[in-house]
Length: 278
Image (cartoon, rainbow, N blue to C red; front, side, top):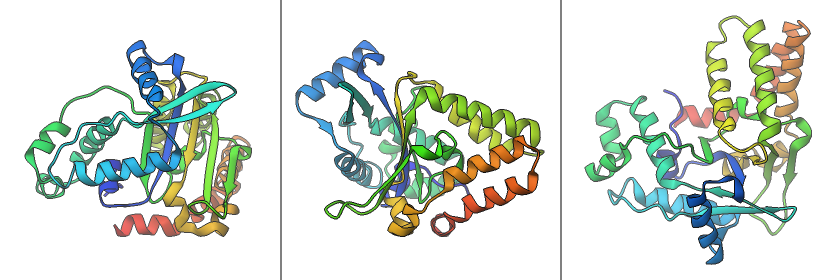
């Protein structure tokens, strides 16, 4: 079974990695920007840790208790060079999308047991074409996510007063899109039977292209990354190894590409085993 996405796993307190887009406030629709400005005027802009707390609290009660709760409209904020960059958490939207994905993965009787209240299920079954600002994945970040970044765009921190070690990758949407296009071209022209990885890369590319090129794209390994410990995160070279694999494919060196890919994948083997065990 593929990994179960956010809304359900968060309710079970499973550690997730997140891929987030922080959009310039002025790039949003007038209605969305006005609502967010009102929230910021009330002092409701969230830090990273507070956003995580709200996600966990909302998910833990919105699904399994059978009590649909309104989306609080929470927004995480970054301020960069005098600009306000916002990432709406869109908890209701993400729950709806997660539920739709889950419907394709588990029998209906299992789904009913996981989300027992019919009112909640009806609320989650609404159709939507909206695009979330946050993607979540349990236990480990999918390898295609790393290819939106350059190796020098990752940062490890472990402040003594913080909440443990943290590994983050940060770039812009305008830089991430062409990188993914390059990988898709290389993989599609060189590898045989690469339909699955091409589909993953394509879906990621389409999602990123939905946002303004000046938006920030952040991969935050969060609680999922901490499963590897500070030492494992500090020496992580997943992004660099994956780009070595891509460059080796471009040069026709299939062996070097396979070694680099295997090295990248091996670094996250323990969290991946937890995901399969769950």
